[in-house]
Length: 271
Ligand SMILES: [Zn+2]
Ligand SMILES: [Zn+2]
Picture 1 (cartoon, rainbow, N blue to C red):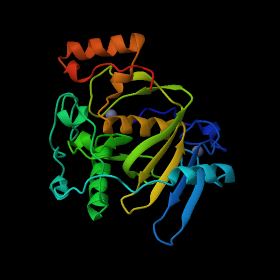
Picture 2 (picture 1 turned 120 degrees about the vertical axis):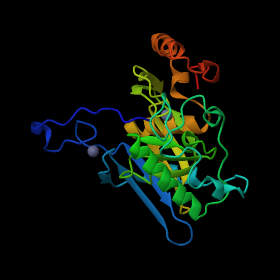
Picture 3 (picture 1 turned 180 degrees about the vertical axis):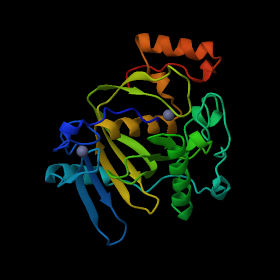
Picture 4 (picture 1 turned 90 degrees about the vertical axis):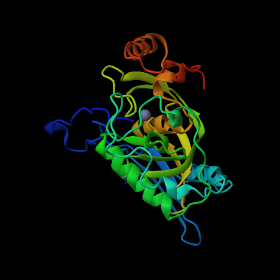
């Protein structure tokens, strides 16, 4: 996902104002991290800017319950090393994507990615490559298939809240509704940023490259970024979630530029 421009805090706002929210910090995200072995558990709430708070006991219990699940259920991937260096190199350019990022129309972007079956040192190294590609492109989130790698790995730019590399992330719960402007590193077309309605809060479960299990109840910017990237991992581009006038406007724009609309059919807005 492309970074959105945020309202800069005014000098008079400084006292107690969150640099991310433009209003006071709030513990909007709740995180439980279960570390393998006897290393224990970390639990906290966090504002989008990273400011941390104690996590309420009832929320902690709920997230722990949701964490109780099978280990990653992917096939072992013997060819995994072949993705190091990525299949969409940083110097490769395309007119409809940010440099180093695969554009819409790339087949890997339009099918679901495969879960990672084994967490090896490779996952961390590839995660670092993804973070570099995301930062170079000016993004706040990136999915592996945006580098033409068909594996279920995403990265995000809210590392102060939680691990920035997430493996096999999936949405366990979603509630509420919120509208926000989104755009995508794989669709660098002026005017393609659009208002997307999504659940306001989501509970997401994922693994870190080092094998810790993370369950996060995310709101605001983190919820938006995670949903945008998990959609990518499921083969869905944000424009497919547009409805009404926004859908008409953006699809017209893409048609005018000869983009492959047959790979981007609008989805039923009901999830
Ligand atoms: Zn804050
Ligand atoms: Zn995107």
